[in-house]
Image 1 (tube, rainbow, N blue to C red):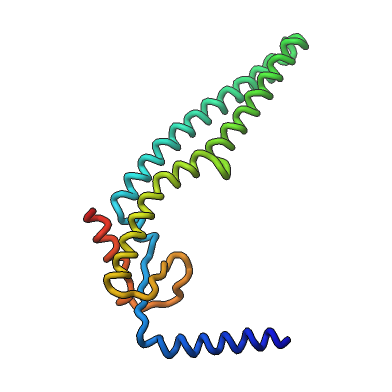
Image 2: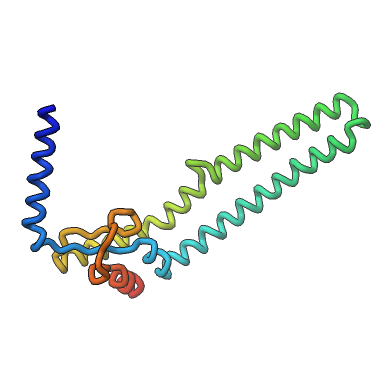
Length: 173
């Protein structure tokens, strides 16, 4: 119980300290979603990503068609096929279905190529944005710059919004 009082006392002291230094603090915010949406480099990265995903989706579609064709063959010819031939087709179908699931997991799963490709394409953009924000913060003596999209800003006056400034610098590079 006494540790709760100690934590509460510390919290009260911090709030008091913040209110005293509040007049001296410089705060700004950005909207990372808007920066990504309006930066030409993001559009280029998105186009590259979309082309790669389109190839994978085409490959997935081809695999699905192979599976469907094998199922149709089994359905239409099941009475005409020998037990041995039916077993071969069923084994091939099972293999194709497993390969298809493995393909989906490899390309689109939690640790799939789509995620890796997305990170590969966006990482340089994020690093570029971070450098610009760091420079603005250093040059203009900001104490804090928040990202409104990350949920850290509930309300802020528009005069503290640095989004356009970051975008202008980013698009000039």
